[in-house]
Image (cartoon, rainbow, N blue to C red; front, side, top):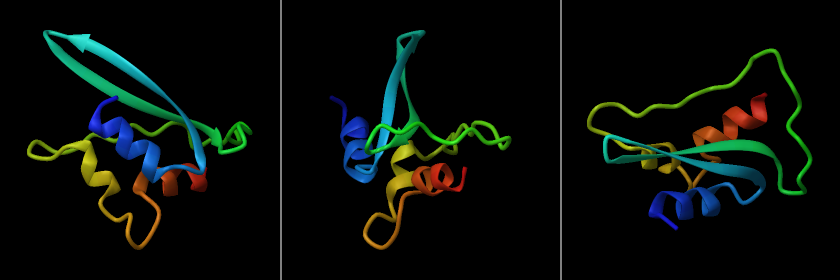
Length: 82
């Protein structure tokens, strides 16, 4: 398990999620899809649609989980907002 996947597991313990890995040109891209709460109940379908978070040029996806000491992570807040 990669450090990113371990971070997601620790940061979003109250959500169910799936990991997808795509390899292209020797790079491995790991994507995470939040699909429900910790009990496995599916997320409410909402017209807001999916969100793809992409870090900036000199950042990585760890930045989305930096605020864990005081609040929910950005992906978790977006999921909970629908």
